[in-house]
Amino acid sequence: MKDFFIVLKFELMNFFKNKTFIISTLIICLIIAIGLSIPTIKDTFFSSSDKGDEEVVEMDGEYGFIDETNGDINIEILKNSFFGGELKEINSVSVLEDKVNSKELDAGFILESPTEYEYVVVNNEMIDSTSSYFEEALTMAYRIGEFSNRGIDYNEVEDLIYPDIQSETRILGKDSAKNYMYTYVLVFGLYFIIILYGQLIASSVASEKSNRAMEILVTSTDTSNLIFGKVLGGALAGILQFGLVILTGGIAYKLNAAAWDGALDFIFKIPASVLLTFSVFGILGYLLFAFIFGALGALVSRVEDISASATPVTILFVVVFMISMIGMQNTEGLLLKIASFVPFSSFMAMFVRVSMGSVASWEIVTSLALLFATTGLIGIFAAKVYRMGTLMYGNRVKLKNVIKALRSE
Image 1 (cartoon, rainbow, N blue to C red):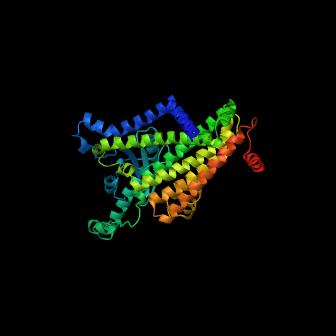
Image 2: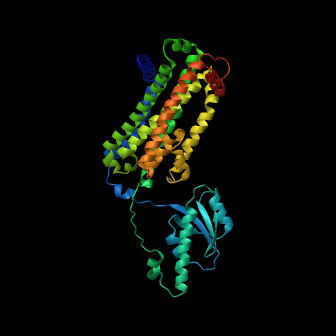
Image 3: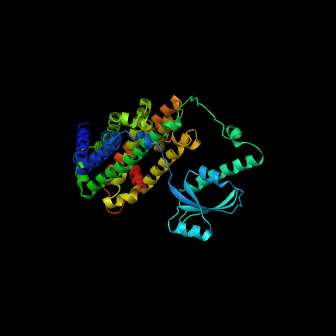
């Protein structure tokens, strides 16, 4: 046990002495602190007397239109109902196209009938709300005109067309929509640190093997102490870094809560039960993949070979991440439920279900037990692969060959 703590301390101190680790942590925390302080800085150095004006959003675009409906549409109503900017009548299609091409007009419309038009624009962007504004205005003009033709005052029936519907939602379980954002942030953060620190652990093991340091280490202490010390050292460094980032964000938001007026409560006000579930499942899932990456590092003789060796595991991990992301849209989906009991995916999938849905206690306990047992077994297997890896140099060793060698012992 003493040797284990020596290895653990050594690996942990390697991270804490690493300038890249320290600087990157400080930069991330600084960016978060400054970003969350912007509203306070703005309120402190800029006058708040203009706040009422900030709420008014005016669209000041200029658009052209050609009326080919022979008066079948009320142009004044169309203009007054168009909230995209100012509508200007143009005499001919060629003039309209020239003005749009020269950017004198933002876009143009050719009215062919009260319910048909052609949109004239230079570039058809992926997101363009102008045509939607125009369609709403055209719909209003058509609707008012048709009611008038039938001798009906539109103002008398407007409440029938746009009734004031009021509703309340009674939530018996979890508010998935409200919990979505912080669940997404935590799952993505877990994905990031596992990928990052998994690669670092694999690189550390491969580096020791390439310079023959591993041969000295395995003769000095048990391989279980080495692999568990390395993995737990890297895990603690990642957990501390991630925890520091979350703590910085939480403190910065709390100090600037008045300026934000509760706008980010949906991210930073996370229930204690959710944080506990995330911590337990997240740490075990982190250790599970860290052991796998450590074993993969022992199968190669050069650091450059790690990417090729880790590709299948990385693909598996990305699939797990995608299942969890998709499952956030429907926490009662069968795929997410199955994934929440598979140890290689349960650390994310079960957390998503607990955070955004309703899960029975026996399901959480069963999933946690399977994950804990699998992590321990993977750790033991990784220690054996680590020991076996000291005897294998040259080309990248295939995992199936290591398994055969372990069976023959």
